[in-house]
Image (cartoon, rainbow, N blue to C red; front, side, top):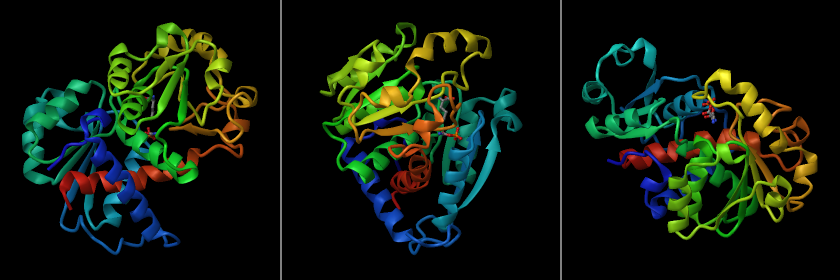
Length: 308
Ligand code: CP
Ligand code: NVA
């Protein structure tokens, strides 16, 4: 049994085999109606709990559909409706849930909740996003990049804007998959130094460049995310917009990256804020492939977790 808690906590060879399996499973389903079961039914007889303490569209639907395609069943639970949200400890919740279900995916605020859940659960736990990281997203993003451009190792990825949870998982992935990452954003929104140091300790070339135009020079991939994340105070919205306006990904900025540079955004997006529709719907955008690949990548993650 394996937990999937973070990219840097999973062996690079396991990450690679998950991406490869995701691609094979995607290819095997090519052209079939979405409701068609997979030929393999590795989750037959398995029940997966999907716990959400924050909103979600992609994570919720892609996990649910993925489990069903592999023959399993799901229950989608809102943290607020569980005793978890009303004082029951994480440890007790983990021990109880482990008596009922075969796998737990949780989207939560505090990373400590995920850690405690994984320490006390006797079934695999998957990180469906915390305030600090979003590893499932980046597995889909690496898969998507490689589908379009081949191996990501040695390529230049540029993260624009807020050094947030998705950025953190990109930094972890830079260390594990061997790509370069340049962060461009205001200093007060830099990614946590711990994440930068960890990526560098694994040999990744991590740069911080305040000038977005200089940052995207030679970029193979430009990435944007919302300027105000779910865990950010809404009162910080105006201040963040003022800080980040200069980092919008628009045609002018993309014009300074490599001509074939891809554009990614994990979604949900605020169009005309962090990125313009001309970029999001432009020829180099792969945002909907990313969204689709959440399904395939997470199916491979669940199989790896369960060893099936
Ligand atoms: N990208 C992503 O995780 O989207 P949701 O918040 O809709 O799950
Ligand atoms: N950084 C965003 C990602 C959403 C998928 C957030 O945490 O709200």
